Length: 519
Image 1 (tube, helix red, strand yellow):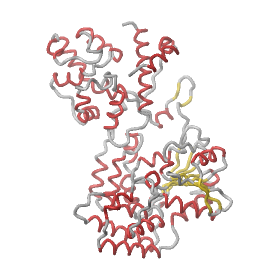
Image 2 (cartoon, rainbow, N blue to C red):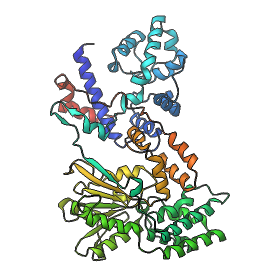
Image 3 (cartoon, rainbow, N blue to C red):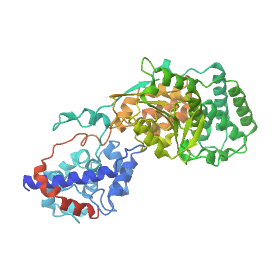
């Protein structure tokens, strides 16, 4: 095949990859099986992605992922290697060697797959070629490598576009606060007593023989670790019990009330611990996290200017915390409009402690035109919201689903941010579950985050385990996270394309015809 023909076919391949990348824009967050799910969707009416319904990439998807990620080696048997190679067989445009092999073996069925007997009927030299190509097949030609394009922020910020001499993505640095051990929020002795009572309640719940929910065991710790008011309201509902009919999964991150119903009736020892928690909480005084938020907004952190002047979003997992913080701040700053961005019609604007329900679009517009400087958001605001006019972010609590931290940060660290550095403050109580997990993860986060482009959701189990005082088991779970990304080897680069050789591909009429066609 001529060089120009290869160039044109390669352009078609790049166009296909662009379409695949648009479908797979969300990073793999929870499990590598998500990569399979994405390619399986692309495979509909296009067997060249993962192969036919008989392909081992589909029928043995976990094994295929293990092969790609290096969890197991390609088998020694040539017949078994052929099973992984033949369906789908790598396209001719991928490598001249595969193009030549196709010519010798004959055209594959539908241009995609060969039958098993093609190997046994092949001449010995062709069998030797198949074995030789199989050695590099997993690294260079497997379906995941061919169809997944990995683009991390760090890569795009440091990769220079040769045509402009500028990075592909303007660099927006993040300066983190609250990370050092002495920067955690001190627990006053009275609140420390209440936190201890919450842990005792969680331990009592964990003694139930048929309970298999780390969430239920640790729910109260999650809430009181956010704000005193969130812990108090949770305990009161559990003692009631009163189900919050207006509770929204968008607001609280998880359907708490549905799960809590399985705890009733509370056992005598559990009620005793819960009453003890509430009694101690009543004597705990002012909320330390609120005082810290107010200080940072009005005075700054470690020599920075006041964060309110830069524009700030304060995140919490829980609507009760967001609502309470917003009301207090609006009373403290009566001339400042404070907005709450939440789900299920709960968004509002506060002025001098009084709120007005509003549509969330009002908040987006207010931030964009500069009339709103202060947003209090639940995790309903952590995705799909552009707040690049704001320059600072405070995490009132650390979500036990660690991907949320990256999603929150992405609201201000994005294209269009006018500042070259944004500030992020991560709050956690000293000696709390969050603090213990932070100490465990701090030395490992760089490698883990570098692999995934963000933190895997599987680390949520570490928080639950630490809440249950399982330090050794938590360490084991952290160490089980791999440190090499299986999909970075081939496409973690941007190649120059000879677009002049692609005029046919780029013709608008041809584009429309191809994009309108089935996959």
